[in-house]
Image (tube, rainbow over all chains, first blue to last red; front, side, top):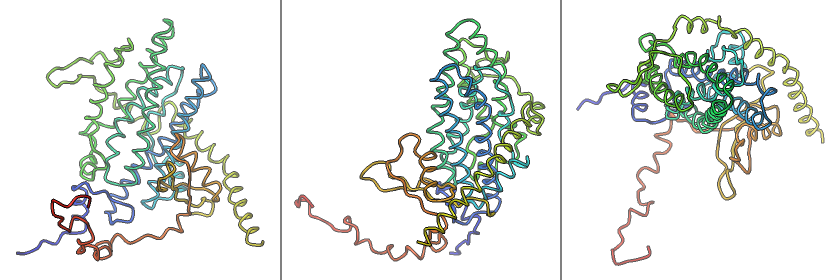
Length: 315
Length: 95
């Protein structure tokens, strides 16, 4: 019998199909490596920039308890960024280059962070809705084909559920408070609902890379599938809070065992992606400023380490 | 890597007394002391560890996955190294 020689790429795909993880030193197609570096670094950038809208409220949190929680959450996001950058580095990407690409605007981060956080209820919405959407995206990635990425995601997901619960608790407290507090919660939901639906990315029909990414198991559900799951999860939670989702088209559809909902404003989505959102410049500006103002610390630490090394060698 | 980038360190954590240190990830730091402090902040925010090892990534030597088939081949045909290779009569207990 004639044996069929598999190409390197076919062998690679066969391993993925058999759910065998790919590890850093294994052979992989260039396109797989490139796509993963882009995906993981974008995710890392989102964690980093994601600290800014919440950092805005640390000094104005309504109690010491809320301030401590918010600090811990923002620190987690820094940690998530670091897990992910180090996963991308196992693919040969350099940390400095990834940061340079973020700062020059070449690399993207999640558009959700280009919306402003105007009231305390926004801290509730960011945790409840934005982190809720992030969890839906991230949980399936714990089983993604690239080992270091999957391991980083396991760590991220463990910590993310605290983020969502503290957000829901903020919303619940506001909704059980004075009428003006409940209004604040509703107003924040009105502003965050649609941008959160945009977090899942363009419609499947406009997402040409989805098929390849799903084949490589670096994406496990399509954008529309996740968006539907999110709406199905969130509408009852909003009802529990006594809030109304700002979409008159939301209606239970027993046939599909899910909610029908309205169409996202894709023009707004692409506009924010292209850099014209409310806070794009402010976010990137704050990030670059922090990086530049920290330059002397990075240099001094290296100089200090070199000096100590030299002294130790002289003794 | 440019000259201003801090070196990369691999981080190993013992989650509790009696267990091995296990690789958890990596991070950048100027020296070992800073690497250990950063590892505490990045990898043990929720009591995940009681001991941390760090080693500069450039000091880790690894086997080559392309050679894996040949490299691990010597163990393939030595099934007699496993207890299940031996048949023990049913009447024999405690073995």
